[in-house]
Amino acid sequence: MNKTACAVLLAGAFASLDACAWGNDGHRAVGAIADQLLKGSHAERHVKALLLPGESLESIANWADCVKGTYCGPQTPEMTGYVNANPKHGEYHYTDVPFQLDHYAAGAVGTADDDVVQTLQQAIAVLQGRDTPLTNPHLFTQRQALMLVTHMTGDIHQPLHVGAAFVDRGGQFVVPRTQEEIGGDAVFDSRGGNNFLLDDDKVARDEHLAERIIPAAAPKAAPVETRPDMAPAAPKPATRPFHVYWDSTVVDYAFRRIGTKTPEAFARKIIAGHPVVPRTGGTPDTWPARWADDALAVSKHVFDGVTVGAATQQTSKKGEPYTTWALDVPEDYPVPSSAIAKTQLTKGGYRLAALLKAIWP
Image (cartoon, rainbow, N blue to C red; front, side, top):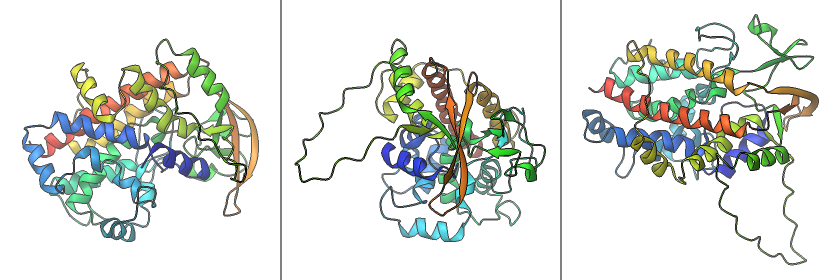
């Protein structure tokens, strides 16, 4: 899935948090880091046994997003079978713990039986051979489990896929006390930041100010001249969802910070820098919850200096009402957000490799 398709999907939805964490390049970067770290290991042999010829963790990293539609191309029989067997597969990609909290606790506000932590735990159990009705309620195959682990290890390191923002009627960030309180007259769900809208022109100005840290993008090709009888190009949207910014924009910034353009090049340069990635304690089945706690800590920095502005009532394509809010971020926001993205993508790749090595030592 390309960046444009992902952005269009998110921008048109506003009501779905589950689409495209990190976008195409971010997920591929996580997979590419793990591919390189697994070379020559026992785990690499197990991974190759579950993948098709020519596949890699990088190439299958977006499979769990691609099954949501046809933006990656036509659905394969494998995808159709998975979707039919997993009607709630869109909910596997995230959890909605208020970002102000410090810990993920199953059953608490914002969590669900099918959230990213629970799904990762189930997929890990399948890869470990602990395949029982209790540990594998969705009947994932080992190949499906590997594709889910690869993708959702990326998801859980995207801060907005764990740390959720809820606002009150006055636009202040609040912590819901109960699940029932959300969606009433007092507490509103930002849908993972999809219902927060950034001014696109301001984002561009902020990016320009940050060029000392984030080199300017390569110039775009000159626009193709159109004939007078051709339909005019669609107007550029004036806003972008905060979730889109964190899915794709910050990944682009992170790549540019270190002078790379592709996921594979990003992975090589990150590994060459010998980053220090803290080891995850405990057994692998406990790692998803620990990673969620780490993402919660990071999500607090995501919202540093961020303020909520005016609310606007919208209507979805299904005729359902929802609320969006203008969001303002500090003018240097591209600098810390790109640093966070670089760190989180690095953690995701190293932790994916560590997880697979722990499963297949």
